[in-house]
Length: 447
Ligand code: TRP
Image 1 (cartoon, rainbow, N blue to C red):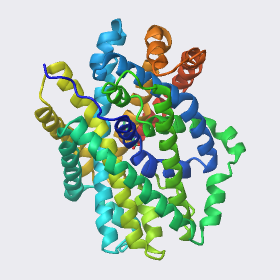
Image 2: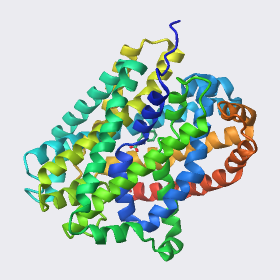
Image 3: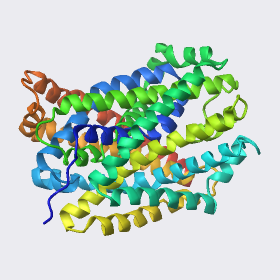
């Protein structure tokens, strides 16, 4: 069998993981979640969950990946016992669903780059324009274009495809977003926007926590690419000498910083255009934000740059989801990379077609896919992994975490005990609420 691939450099791994983490979650999903769940109040809960749940679960994925040096399905087959050896399958299913709708949304982003370059945001009314973008053949076509780009990069392999492309994409995302945030800071609505974004109403958290907590947890998992084996897969291409906790902290820190900066772009633009009602959900950047772009100086170009940044971020994330399923076919079935990627890419494209073609006008299929994958499967995946390393394979986790440390001291047990009780209890609560929310929205749609 051919030698298994690996990263060429340490920065290659970090950039790939950051590229995976930073995506639509940061720039498309994060601002509308903040808007929907009360501004800064949501931000506070989200930051706590990133630090005390997201970070420990990321270390779980890293340690499993590096210990086994296999894809997530194979990794759990190797170290799991009984039912726990099957956990990897949750990831493969989640990967199919997530990538299929992720690519559809990314396709809309591509259309909005073109609209901006033509200087046409909100030309026919922002909501009508978004309606014309989603659904029907154009949406299927842009979904296909995006999937083709994903296939192209992943087909080139770890070093020549993923690693090389993220070395270009991640610095570009950061530079573009910072530039946009600086410009947004000069707009007239910036002051009010910062106040909304940065001063939390703690009373709102207390009275609304059954909504804020589950939403913030789902967002934390999504934005860090957790619960789906991406970080298992990426760490499986990693050498023994790395300090997983240190790399993890860099990755979590950068992802959080970039989501935060995306808010520093979105809210000043909105407030300047006097659009303070940001409750339009998944349409947020397409409807409210593009309408705002249509009314500020240089809005067309600015919008095109903004959507191009989002497109790059989406691409560097999408390749990580694809790599999970591809690594499974390569490791477990000995299929060569190029045919594996091509076949999967086509299959995932097809799974996404209902979301892309959807002409309901209310994004029914997007809601279904996002609800299932993001609010249920990811949380379930994370929960199972936390139980697994917290209670079943504790020594394995501790051994991996201590590599690259001169002296881990009692931090290892702090980590294990964080997983054992707080993380597990919290994820169970979140899963319960999310499942009932998803159930209700399904009944609302179909029943
Ligand atoms: N983290 C990415 C984002 O914020 C999306 C993503 C990539 C993802 N890989 C994932 C989400 C795996 C969940 C699981 O857009």
